[in-house]
Image 1: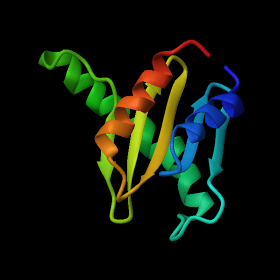
Image 2: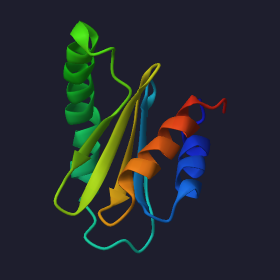
Image 3: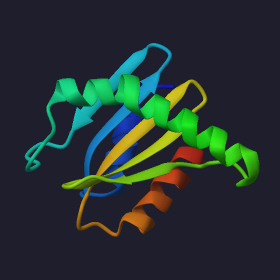
Image 4: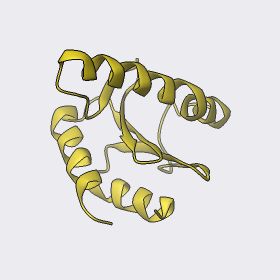
Length: 118
């Protein structure tokens, strides 16, 4: 998987996407849209991708597998934005979305794009 190509495709979906990260076996690739307000610190984002999101996905996936029919993605509402996190075969993708976006529609678009062949 070419992380930069995937990030380009995700950013192309909407101007409401603030940040995209792809964690794969070879590390984390992150990119932020230029000029966004109230951006998180890049070091904080890196730890989120290395520690928080993998742990969150493991917990939610395990719960979903018990009796909920599995898990597709997690949507988090932080104070200034939403965070969409979805597992990949060898990692995950994480997308920050502006707070005023139609987040459910955009989450559906992100999910569909991640199902499409690259």
